[in-house]
Length: 603
Image (cartoon, rainbow, N blue to C red; front, side):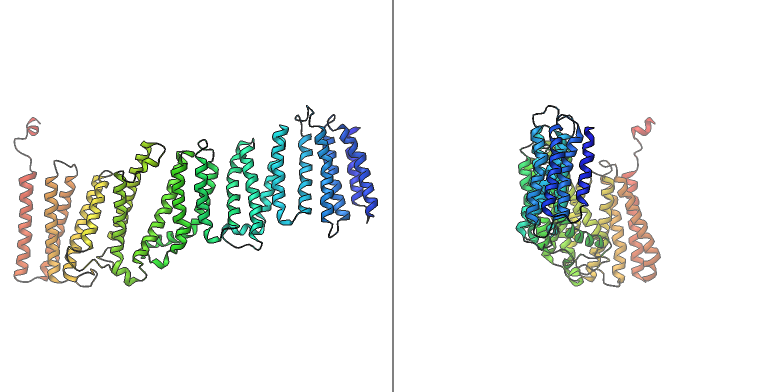
């Protein structure tokens, strides 16, 4: 019959709850009597009985306070009811103290039931007796106390209860008004209250990350601690400088992580890195949008890019801090973590460098694009390729900053190759395809050969020396196309000046284009003959020579001859004939197989 006492306690609580307008004194006497009758008996039997007695004590404490609050609460009585909650917490607290030395208390959920009821009443007492803004601090303190109690009592169930209260603290923080400061908006309340709230939550999460026995929970708590610490900083630092403070925090976190085992602080570093990336997302999005538009031929104007101050705070300084973190704390994470960090730092640093570089020429109109865009692109490509070659030669000394020297040397080679590839790709996409001076208005310079065209060609050829290691045949194809375009552009500049898109082609220029095609064909053939013993793809140069020759022949017969008269027509056919004879002689003289070839005889 002993378990039936809990039913009696429940009926008594229900009767007290429906008591219509009780007088406070009589109500207090009835409640005290109820607690004495049912609670006293449960206290005597709780550590000799079963879980039902612990539930009875917890129910009396929580239910009795709830009934009293519902029947007697009035405006202005918050302090009195806070004391009543503390007194109610004394009932499960007394039961816990009585069973502290009980050897069987770890075998079931009696102890955690009592501890959870007492903790909940302490939270209610703090919520009623303290200012409303401190509720998150109270819950965080109670959660930390439960974690400590779990360690002292050697009862892991109490730790699970602490995790529940910790989650409650996060919910309260997420619902507070100052949460808007996390993304740069201003809150209604003073900042110091928010600092205390978020700092208390961060301390609680850090304690769980340090002391909790739940391994997966420790990883989550570590990341949450960083997030809440960031929230505390965001309450005091002006919104403009929050990304800078976050970046400095990442560097400090990496400095501390290097003293711990590998991977121990990976969740915290990952959350900090994610926050840095989120703050950089908006200017990065603006920059990426303009870059994507440039791929369809839309010039990138400086006014369309994010402001230099915004880029410095959200991208450049975080990139520097991330680089410092990788240098100082790179050994605290595994190889995958280092690669992710390096990629993020490279993206942020590259975008910041590009936006800063765009300020040098500050192209703000299409007229300025026509006048200076080719010079701007050429300088940018030269910078990229120059840095790439410096990295390939090990002059940046990235290997010194890497935990493994050999891996650091591989990083240097990878960085150098990527920079050169980026410069070459930028040159081919923009200066050769999209914004080629032959069909897009671009000033190349007034003087023949003393202009930007040879510089662009030289940069491409230097970068293609590295590309030979990837695909020699493809690199040679690009070389042929660049030489042909360069010859046409140079010829065009001789007649029209700096701007090559001027309409109309004169008769002499048109004839010289045919001559240029013949000259290039002869040059490609000679190069193919010279390199046939050294390169397996020398045949490609000879094929290109043949195609150029066919183009020149077709152009002379189909177009040039119809527009020429007299001696010019005769001269054009003579030049074409002698060129064909010369090419035939070269093939017959240098490419034919000798008669006494031993391999042929053997065959």
